[in-house]
Length: 316
Image (tube, rainbow, N blue to C red; front, side, top):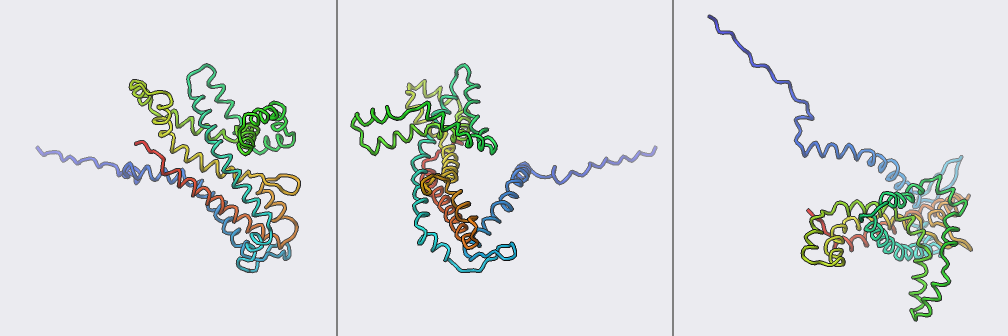
């Protein structure tokens, strides 16, 4: 009898994706998810940034409906920083407002997140209340609120600062501290309205802390203050760094500065009063102001976050 020849069935060839190991697959999906951000960064940020830098080094003219530039070096920057004295004062005002607002904003966001992370009835409702400011930050809602001045009128009708000024003044606290305290309390509505994102970030960080850490601390007899300082604060310190970057950038983007007898956002002043004021020569001045403002924002973020990052604790 002839032995039947059996041929082993050939295994189907694996696709290139299945031949990849887990680390390469993770890297591939990371790039795929980053592609929308990378496309937006290249075409909607880096390209306009490079154009702004070029415009700031040129003398702009409007020829046949198009802007044309002649390279003049740093002349626009000399005019912005040397001739136009108002811009230097505006930059100082924006920086001082950032220094005074951001720490209070981070503290309040962390405090509210700790309260919302507790166990109590109606927790979901109160969490939704603090998410509403993020929804109201959309364009249409913001314009409607600005037209009706609903937020400002509500804050003015609810809180009257006269009693606080009299109380603090009679207590013997220095006038400088009195003005700072009154400013913080009077701006509480604006602070809460702008720290919705930070509250969500802190809330997610608090929920990621292992409950076993708190159980061990309580078994060792730690007080609530010790638990906060030695467990909660170190565990959420990376989120504090993220919130700092977001808060500093937002503070500079929405910085209000005095313009004549009114106040206006510095970005709006550069855009409407300088760049598109109707004079083509001012287009280069506006580009120089924009680039200086952008560089100042990056410098503040780099210095402050560089100092804070030394105390950040990363848990493995």
